[in-house]
Image: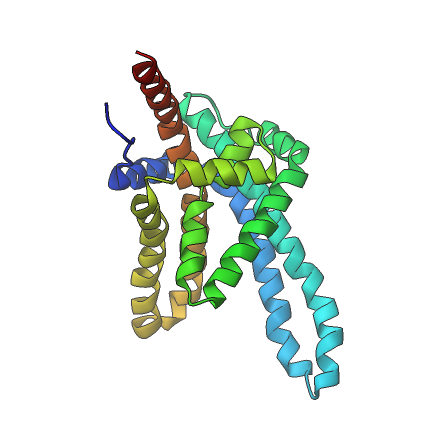
Length: 241
């Protein structure tokens, strides 16, 4: 019996992206996030013009910080909708936005708690020579699917993600890296040669890729996790035998 269940990276990327192509309604929750992010970005762009001394920074932080915190909260809650929507698609059902949102509302403490903890770990890890941050990002890539699909709490979801990814570190790293590279490969030439349309194209690409990044862990977890459970049960039977 195999010691692990492998992720077919290119297959997972292709199939998860095809979900967006065939069910573009799945873009709507991330559209809310991206529009709010544009609003927050506009506030941050205005802020430097209002700074004339160090004493001006604290009032601006009080003004901008709540919007930054709110944008993180909105993103985390929207992330919570994707495992349920992807599950709808894989079960050949219509995407139920209202039902997904209702389930997210019931899991707000777990989602926000996990979002804060993972964000802090990844942030501190990046400060500490980058590599620890990358490792934390890989470990907890499947936290939201674990919380939403298995009704786990924040810490339990993080533990489940870490266990799930134990033998899939490099594959999971590729699942995170490749969408980022695609953004760079498309936007950098636009910035150099067609700056007039770069901002519009970048926004559309950002919306699609951010949705893709939310679909990928949900798709992989739904596809691979049941196989992991069967593998573990099979190993236990072998040991008992």
